Image (cartoon, rainbow, N blue to C red):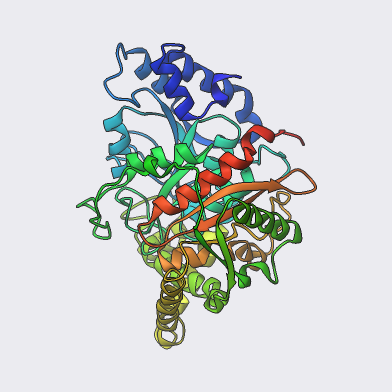
Length: 483
């Protein structure tokens, strides 16, 4: 097995046993990037030479993770490195400071191999809305990798990075993880600092790990979780060691299965695969029960009203004067504002800004935005009620497997429906992890998500780890890079 195929915990074990060196690990990934990046198109900015240079200066590891490579979604600030959000608006922006998660990784000595492609300003479901390139799914290069963290998920699946950081506003970690056959964890809102994450929708955004297996997710969550005074929404909760949840045991675990997640809009092969996984949990001793979560039917509309409203506000700063791209075509101040935003933003970002501005406008605020916030409270309440009875809720991660690039790009509503299963979790602010649970008839991966109570990442990690160890998905299936 090649070094780039190993998980981080396997690399660490070999390092501790002096079987390999940090330089060998880094060169292995750089060679892999040189081999596969032309096909996958996962990176916006490569910092591989800088990473190798740092590793070559390490004589003795001062921390457990010193010299371990990682990939970073291109909406997290790394000081002195381009941070573009895959947008022409920020094409030449060099971050003057580090995001808190980057500071935490730097303290442990990790090295970034580069910034990963994404849907512009994290607005999209396929990574087709990047201003620079379209990322491909390593399982089939004609298919989308999901989004908006498609570059991160595809880079991990293609073994170009051992793990990565993504961000999840309405499913942007979990959905591409599902489509690329890797593990994606969206932590409880507030568990991981958002300081230095360029905002899409501030009340929904959350940074989290994309990894090859559940153990690496628990390890990376340990590194990035924690209270941050620079983030007013950061939760001040006790520090935990999530690796202690890596226990192969679900006996007596109460699992709720919401019937609304297996109805209209869910692909039959996806539904069958997730239901088979649920049966596996029963065989392993879990207690499974179907229940109704009717408010989930309203989550998608609620999400898009709130998210677009917040996007309209957050992106107001990019006006050609204060931040971002400035047009060369102007005769007045108004021209600068209008032309800079017209030329600097892509179609999907403009669409969401317009929708957000509309729902916040006088005469429509009460009818849409205020009502959506009330429904958000109802969604939170229904999830809280469900968790009084169940330890974990299981559902499909995405309603479909990866589809062809360009297949749905001219139908925004059809693309929004791809968020059907993931957005309720962001609206409720609870944690969720997506793990592979099979492949469809074309050999494309299918993911299921395990949803937990607020700040109870341990339970979903334990449940995910138990299933993963029982089924060994990554040992049985590999991306094919077929065209």
